[in-house]
Image (tube, rainbow, N blue to C red; front, side, top):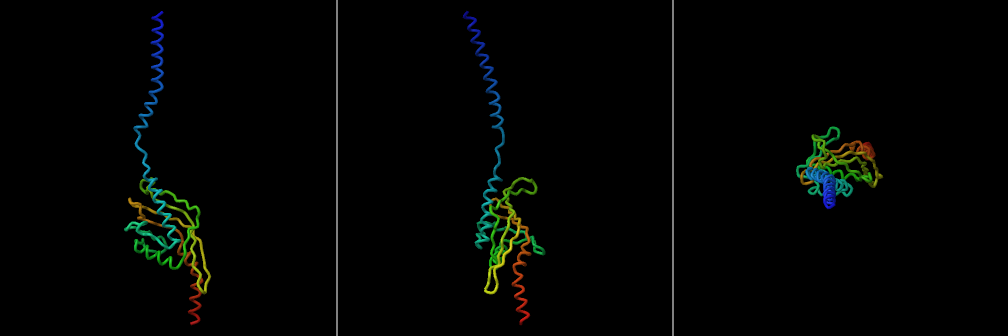
Length: 200
């Protein structure tokens, strides 16, 4: 009788041991597999979030007509010229001069709301690299004068920004017919100048 109870007890322990092995071995193997996986690289996503804020500030600066170039741009930043018969690119000093001329003549406002910023990719690897791009609509206004009313126009625009390791804009390019828009806005002023010339 004692022997029978002993064997039943031992048999029960064996079954428990087998059951525990069946339960814990897969869990251990899964934990080992997960632990051996390389860490997820979120650096591109983190850079995109940070750089998106820089882009939003840059865009807002066009409405306020005040831009902190040192905070937003790298010293060797360039803006690609995409207009017809324009030069190759603008340096940072040329960007400052160009913006000052534009603000002196026109008022700018991004009217796409909300403006959705999209992650860009490296042209070689096709992987996200922290660059930022957007599709939006700009409203540009030629302010009223003593003799003319204000005149506005809207332009669909695509723009992209690349950043250096410090998170500053190093390369910028935009595509939209600003030349055509400016010509439209200045039509009345050109006609006034022609009339003055004829009267003289």
